[in-house]
Length: 202
Image (cartoon, rainbow, N blue to C red; front, side, top):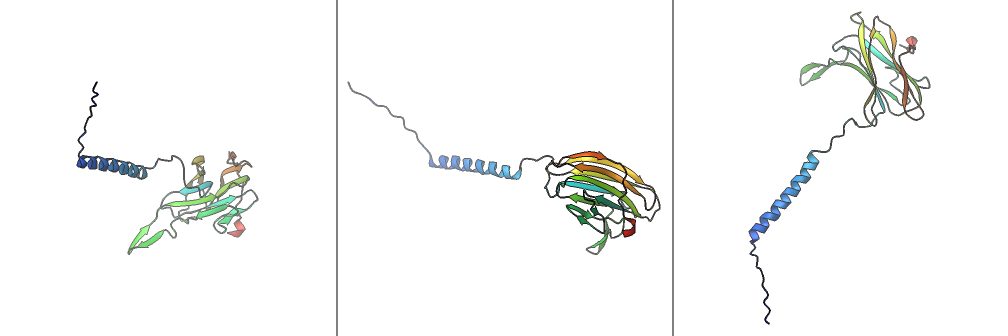
């Protein structure tokens, strides 16, 4: 018996193959580019240059000068004449409207923001006291001061946010006190008054 073997023949067009391969390559490159253009969002994370941040703000364009004082666990003080102690840093000292005028391209620019910022770049255990002091006044009026304490590493967490009033020149108030434990966790957040401003050094 004769055996017959049938075969199927496929006609291929080299130009079609080339177009198909080019389309595959283009799709692959597009997907790779899309991944780099849209990295996944990391909600609530920031660049960990500090562990804690304290922000003290008062009214924009106010000429009054409010100072931030912080006492660390060993009694060390951070203030405008001593901007660094241990791992505490006064990153910005604001003097009201003084030094807030900039000359850029021949134009005078005024920065209206009144804000002082202190960072703690580590977690030394112990109690921290944050006070605000009505250092200088042009208006002789009460000044509402907002104090913001946040843990910023590894993710942003607001620990304290409040507004208090400094009613007269020279007044000092405790904005917040908190304790960092040996495990690095924050506890005992309160506003019990404690004077730390050293008037004789001003």
